[in-house]
Image (tube, rainbow, N blue to C red):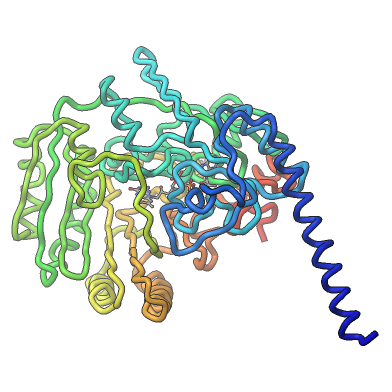
Length: 484
Ligand SMILES: Cc1cc2nc3c(=O)[nH]c(=O)nc-3n(C[C@H](O)[C@H](O)[C@H](O)COP(=O)(O)OP(=O)(O)OC[C@H]3O[C@@H](n4cnc5c(N)ncnc54)[C@H](O)[C@@H]3O)c2cc1C
Ligand SMILES: *[C@@H]1O[C@H](CO)[C@@H](O)[C@H](O)[C@H]1NC(C)=O
């Protein structure tokens, strides 16, 4: 027999053997998940290809299965199956991870989708709400405001409260009320053993510290979160100021000089794109006071136009709810292919050279790109100590997000990504603080451990060793077992 033929037989035999193993694993996982009540989707199912499309289509992974947990028990069964079969397991709440870490950041893992864990139980007397991790921000704003309450959070209605509030969560009510994570009172989580445990100020307080800022994916699967509620103001005023791109420096000057002195009832965000520049924001009160509180800022930044809209709290949520698409609060997602960088900037703010570098980058890159600068300084986020929760970025004046939408053309996108990468490095070195925002997670960020978690990183590693010593919950940028 020729050796070629022998090799072929061997290869076929080996292939068959390999396929049998893969098959055995699939069958075992299916068997193991038998007790799960919620929907299960496996790679051969028709809906699989649709169910793995999340917000960012730039990267995708092929999970071994997706379980739509219908109860805490389904989550527990799933975690136990994953550990028994030694496959990875990860939670997906809203699917808005910038690196698609809701699919684990690698192939072949078990995804526990939290969509159906969507209870919202309001206790009006205690001013608290127990919120299932699978709820979307839009649904939460809507439901709570009908009872006269709010939780501060981001603007995009389809973002999931699970990932969002475990990593921080900043939006247009944040200078008054802080981060979503700052308003958490208690967290229920399924740990690596499949046990349901509670973390709050009195119970597992070290885990409670870690979950508020570093909780996305690293310690367990959070099933529900108890939030402190704040009453909605009877009326709020949304506003927008337009700027000439050529005059953007004056808007930054005003943010730098006046930003942290503006009352906490105002939160505002400056967006710069290839051809527009605009500040949008909300003042928690009537328009006459909004105009007077912002008069100095307007005078000093010289916008080409200003608009004020006195409205209900929920109308302001809807107005800024989806990147310029007014009137929608529909929490369905809008998949697109993107990459982003984030920067925290302390006082006295970006220098004029920094502003020039940023605007020059945006106007020359081939892919549609915007920079969003969220004012933080002088607000509630600053008033909590950096070591009180895992969210370390407490002394910032503002945060800048630089967001590039890819075109779909491979060579253009390759150029855009490499330009964004090198600009991100040099901009951070020359003009911003060392730190970046963990909720705008970026797989290419060097020294992300300290850029995301700063002086809290060592403590987060200790908490990881205590609650997940076998590193069951891991993804490419999860809190590791060792600090080095
Ligand atoms: C369009 C858009 C707008 C955004 N706007 C804002 C904004 O205004 N302000 C802001 O602060 N951020 C904003 N973000 C960022 C957002 O907060 C993060 O992407 C957040 O992680 C998304 O949470 P998710 O549950 O939707 O995502 P997922 O992809 O489901 O989860 C993100 C990470 O958290 C983990 N995770 C999810 N659920 C759980 C759980 N139940 N238990 C444990 N781990 C879990 C996942 O495994 C993954 O690692 C925005 C993102 C997008 C795409
Ligand atoms: C937090 O830091 C402050 C100093 O900034 C210190 O006094 C305090 O003990 C620290 N708290 C914890 C829990 O480490």
